[in-house]
Image (tube, rainbow, N blue to C red; front, side, top):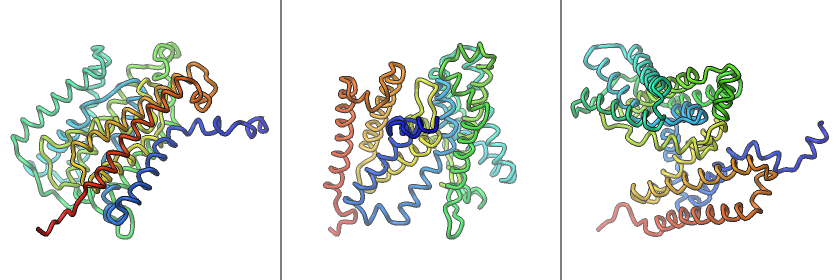
Length: 372
């Protein structure tokens, strides 16, 4: 058995790691490009710190969303849960005099409660995940708008700002430690517990999982509770980072997190998950957006670039999953087929668009402080 494993082709040995290899290759491409275009600005310690702080904000949500998507679900309400949790925490601290050490856990529990409500709507009333969480996104955002009444709640205790932007002297920022800790917990949960095994089993075949005795609906509810709690934690971190919160905060959290998880190799069709891939996906998107900002490309083009990465990643992983089902003999041999050649051309075209966008930004970037 050992000899057979040792003689296995390189492509077969790499196949389990393709989810992490994909985003890592894109990260390397960004590093190389920015090393040529804007090395002085992009590789400054302060800029790298900004990338880490931005990525840390999305890590808890990406961890939880990995479980939800693996279950063939989706949660479009995490942005509004983050905003509403932050608003409720701010009211507890500023208007009702709660200690920050009490208000933060309450906010996270309220987020878990909103996740529970999402899960019950989906499982008990058979509402599709997409419609149910989109509707609840409107509900939670509406509550946030009603409570805040257009106010910006600001100036919070130091403990909260430390959670959002603090740094251990000579070490990484505190939010990065929180984000990495959640990703490690998610990795252990996915790979070392029944919760992770059941998640993959349900995502692969819900009917078969139910026949084996797994409580499918209950498990889905648990996943949405986890997603709500992690969204609330992100809302707390966002409040600390900005030292302020308002009802319109976190408008694109859902799309950013879903993109990071999908880019990291978790399948939208369920049954395939990679926590390391989700971690790499979060880093990739934060690095890409920071690169576009460094090149002074306006926000709308940043959205275009994010969309290109998402489409190419989803198309690639969907093709790879089809090859798994068809038994094409591995992803490398599948690339030699006509479908594989089409996928390569499609991916190359999308990558070319992204590189052209970065190059255009680099060429058009003028002096940010013109003298005159």
